[in-house]
Structure formats: structure tokens, C-alpha cells
Image (tube, rainbow, N blue to C red; front, side, top):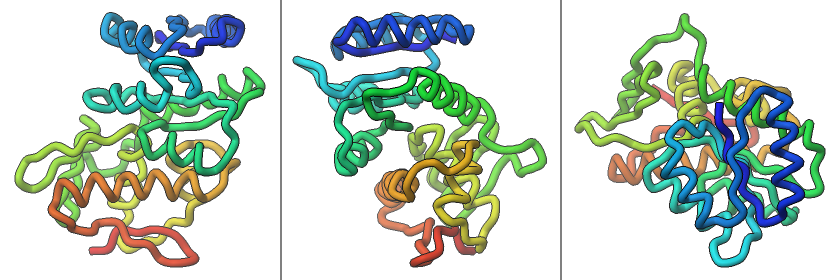
Length: 228
């Protein structure tokens, strides 16, 4: 598994590369946003990107926007920005996870493993391969979501995981902690805002593709559900 590490701080790139090597991954390095885009274009087998936000010329946010035009590659943001709005902006733009500097490299490795596990195994094998919920057709095996008219909705691995979880348990309400533990496949260690941002982004994509149809409902003070 190749993992792209992008940061203008060479010491951080070298540190993460050492830990990735020790975990059996092959690090691919880039020191600017533009170089990251080039590396992704020339290495089709990169499976995940660890990306700094504050870089000159092309910021991490700009990189995410460019990548998300045609790729669902998992992205972990590593940033010195600690505010909630900075985290939310990264997640809304299309990042899958957010780690604040200074960080423990072991924590980053845990996030990498969790996200890759999430990407490769969205649901258990005893759940339906294809679900039809409202205006959507959800295919578990291909990780594809289409409208009934055949238009594809491009989702990240985590967005797909949230949608499939809710759609495969219609009328059941899942709290933010439930969603995090089932979809991220680790104990909930983040605020509910992380889940909220992903659900919001997922809703926006669905409503844009279906001319405003609402598939995911909020049960205030409790969580989220898909109702049929």
C-alpha cells in the first residue's frame, strides 16, 4: 500500500515516512500541494494521503478540492490549526479525518489503519448487496450510489459508510457516537461535530443529485435515521 505524505516541513515528512515504513506501508513524499497533485496523477496505486493544510502557493484545502473532483482517496489532514471551524472546513471540503499538530506519530498510524480498514470493509457480509431507499440505489460491493435515473453520486468512503449504515437499518436512530464507532471502526474519541459535518456533506450531495429530496433525517438530541 502506497501512502502519500504531503508537508512543506521535511522533518515531518521524514518522521511519518519512517513510521509508515515500520508499519509495512510504502511512503510517497511531496513537499507542496502542486507536487502532491502530480504524485497522485503518476501513482495510481496510492491508497491514502496524509496532507498538511498550511502550505505556500497551494494550500491543503485547495489540494483536497482538486483531488475530490475525480477521486475518493481517503485523506487525513494534519494541521497546526486547532479551531473547530478549521477542522470543519477541512472535513466539509472532503477530508476524512483531522489530526492536530504537534501529534504523536503512533496516533497518525492508528488513524491510517482505521481509515484503510473502513475503506476496504464498509459493511459485514451478511448485509444486502444492493439497497433501494427513496431516490437512491446503494451498491455495497462497488461502493456506488446512484439515483433512480442512473446518475452517480460521488461519495468518500466514510460518507458511503454512513449512508449504508443508516439505509440498511431503516427507521432506526443512530447517535453520533454509534455512527463513529460503526463507521470509523474505533471507539468514539472525537466530538459529535465530526459526524455532523460528514452527515451534512452527505446530505448536500444527495439533495443536489435528487433535486432536493431529503433521505437522512435528524432526530434532534438523539441522532440520525433513514425513514421508509
